[in-house]
Length: 110
Image (cartoon, rainbow, N blue to C red; front, side, top):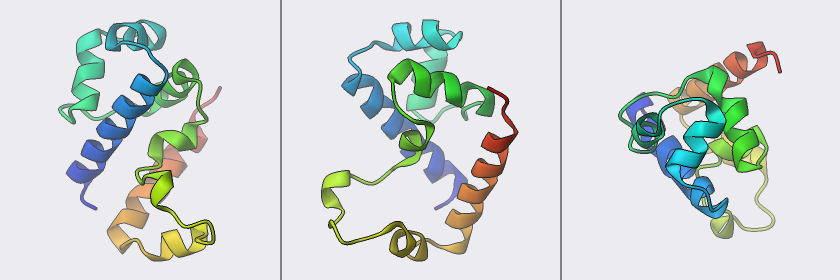
């Protein structure tokens, strides 16, 4: 997955979770401390997400942080498929993006 594709997938996931939480872009923006246009840009992959905003977004949506990065539909995963198999199916570039993201998230102080 290329970086651009990652932002597209993140934007789709953010929109999905926001709609599930039944809040508008304006409401999410207010809770996170950004302009509504910024949320729209995130959802449409026009601007990359700022790492420091990720915990605030997860909190506003009422989900754990990792759920922002689950880009596959849970209904499509077979019950016996585990995370090791999922990670093994990813390319080196996709894993590098994921691990770099995890490193950055670990630096954030809550």
